[in-house]
Amino acid sequence: MLFSAIEDKQTVIRNTKSGVYKQAKLFERKGEIYAGANGGFIRLLVGGRTSHPYMLWDDIEVEFEISKISIGGGLVYVEKRVSN
Image (tube, rainbow, N blue to C red; front, side, top):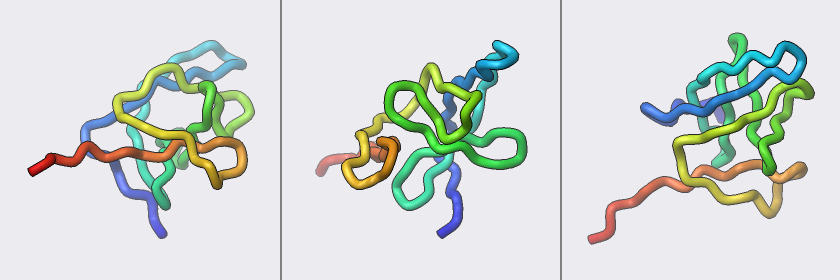
């Protein structure tokens, strides 16, 4: 399964080595949330952690839940659905 962009949604990520904050586009893969970073993707985890050892996320523009089956507590994208 490929990465799919979550249209018009972003997150703020921070490099803990340099202290630089960046705005990054959000992506979804198998229901989990990723941020685009340096031509690749980093998985967003619970508590502001990510799959990258020197990156943290501070803010996010989508609703999410914490994965119960993912190792490390990945964030699961919750789409806003229009009720009838």
